[in-house]
Image (cartoon, rainbow, N blue to C red; front, side, top):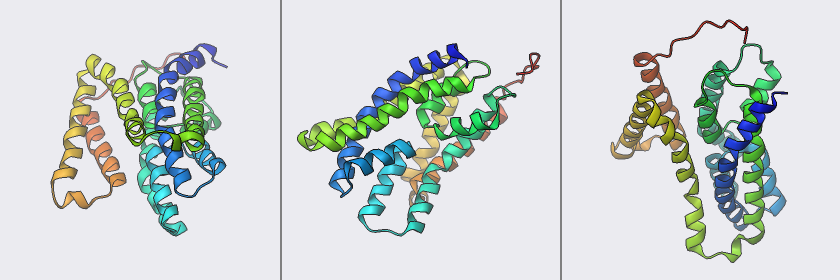
Length: 238
């Protein structure tokens, strides 16, 4: 076990876990108010780890949607995690077994991917395990707290908690954007492309899940073409 990498991941994951607690609190409130029991809401958060997917799933459950509708919605919304997993797999040491790669892929979220991708050089799967050990309990316990006591909070506080995840994600990307102009270009490019989907009438009809995927592929592809990262010779077999 790579203890140092685990400790570093755990340290970097604590702010993520705290941010997740606030957002998941809102999910717990919405889930219980939508008819789910407390344990059902907690189980969803423990096994899914996707805020957009879970909120979308609640809407389908509330409207008595079909399994096919649920499956297709989750596929579209969460397909970006597949792209993130591919990317992060290339950043891992070459001798990392497939079992570790699958476990890391299970714990991929936007924020965990952000802190992992920003690490210099190759990363150990134990870095991700450390981040997951802070983030997953934060998301799950936040759901539990929201499901149990969320009804006691005023509406304005619930609304404030729901935007906490955006501030947390800004805290992940801003330091990296300050250090690397390429990262700053990716951020600005993603903002520009996603804005087009909000203002152009034809593009506004595209679902939010596909918007994320299209934006990711276009901007990341352009960055890889115009700002390629030179591969260093791997001399240690890692």
